[in-house]
Image 1 (spheres, rainbow, N blue to C red):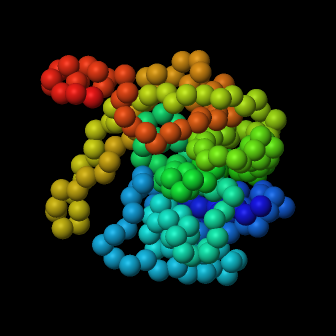
Image 2: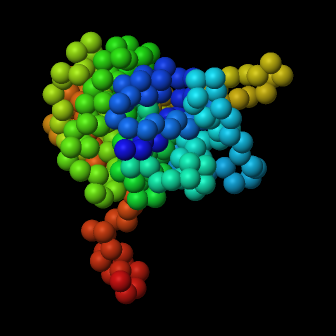
Length: 249
């Protein structure tokens, strides 16, 4: 069993180390993570400059790029083999609903999925790393459960684990993505030079968080496991647009 582990909080993040430690004994583990925190970078690849790979004192390798860069470089030449499983995380904060479109944690797992490898993204629901070791053990249990079910085809799972001292024993549910309200307004400030600068505002509150969603699971101390796909085609709308524009399908 060969496992590639990445993240988006950077190679020094506590969540990465906790996930690696929790997965010891499951197989050969290689870690390739970003040099810096790359939260919110989504699936971006660095194309305008070369990438460098370094090795930390603990053996983790890190790349001066994005989470997708890390997995892409690993799978297209750095490792020299195709892993059986790609893991990403544990992220410092939830990746639920619309967050998944922006998340570097989910993006790293998505990159593995695009290469035909079973991939799982792990996040803690609340920031701050509270009860991180318990979350890491819960993540290992999910990995073991997935391995027992079989790794015969590529899949992409997004897992959110409540910050709970007993996270390993919390119930688990298969969920769908909820939806958020629009993000809050940007925050305007003046730089030391008197220039107007902008900070991206906080994410909007959940607006679709009913039973069956990842938001509902997290709010009820349940580990949320959401199967994701990459196909963004609005299949139901194809005939409508064909008629509207007078074009064939």
